[in-house]
Image (cartoon, rainbow, N blue to C red; front, side):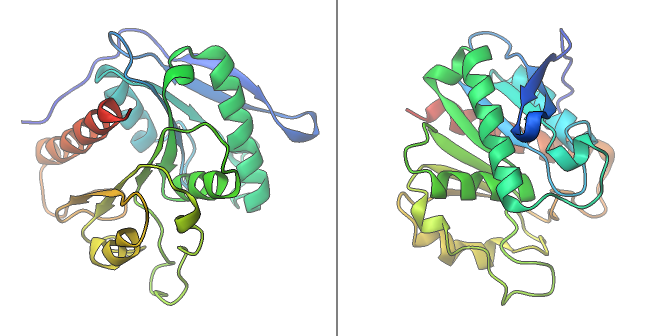
Length: 234
């Protein structure tokens, strides 16, 4: 059966200074027990850190022993629909990392970054362009290998520069890139990333024609896989 998680305390609100004297908000979901590390999980292009997906995964991973941090990119903080340009997104992500290192003790021991779709993609660009960035690994939830229906427009040229452990969670029916499309890309990387395939899952891991309880079980398996992977990282 699916697992229902109950958060014992509300997330801690952080205010993160970014470029041009602006700020974005960030939420810290404290781990239950001794944290295995800190995972900074960025949101996707179409929803902010308060979306159902982000909140559900944040709460669950905190219950599983991970200090989980979410944040808003500038465009969602300002309630705009179109994402900022990649340099703005990356600069915001880096500012969040700097704040988290100061505010969340477990981030000094083990920091993982990544996120949902675009958020995970921005994490890969950030690490690829900053080889000295102290990040233990990346968790990518639905990596957008290409736009839907345009498999020729690949977003993988930078991945070889990451040189960090990675966990990629990909739905079997993901229109942004199936596990079959991703597998040969990941096989060329060093170290070779771990690929967790969500059977029947779409870009947000939703499985067709299943009950709510069955979907909760699918999500719980994904969340446990992420927490276990983070726990195994050196």
